[in-house]
Image 1 (cartoon, one colour):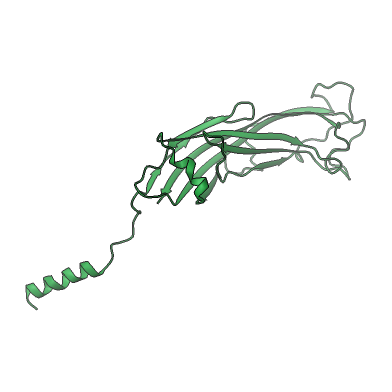
Image 2 (spheres, rainbow, N blue to C red; image 1 turned 90 degrees about the vertical axis):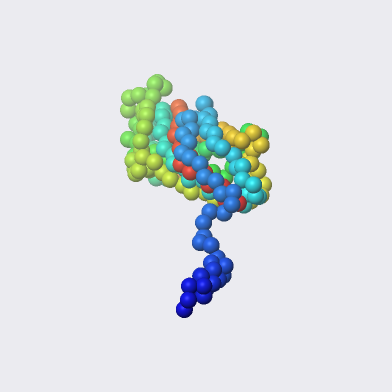
Length: 221
């Protein structure tokens, strides 16, 4: 086979075989970005570049990490010991972070809510007549890392957003996506499955903090 024939065949192969797969035109990725620690009393915030590709955006993939910490105080106001005694169970702390956009909407972050059972807390004794969150009937706790609920310091979540209405905040014309992290937090004390009456416990959650890192933002056109 002479050189001209070989060159012709190679040229044909280049034309006939598709190019290797790779990122689509307009594909963009950013990160990591650290959010300010967020509580119900003091919401946090995080910002990152918005999508600026030249073709329509089809989906956003968010890879995020979060760590929780909290503090609470309790005082048993019943004249009996009921903590964990049938038919009563244990109160719990609930928190969920809303990721709100500049326009006030909410994005699907993929970060889950947390329900922390207080079953590991020592039994509260009968009310001693003083609400001081101390002594046999009371307590105060600050938990910077609940290794039972969250074995690894950081919990990673991945969320793919592909609904057209949900993609709008990621295409902000000013070039920046700004999210406010607004946690909702409260002490769950359902009657009668957790506590004898609504007034059985004084106190509640002092604060519940969410530390968040947006590890990766992937824009897929």
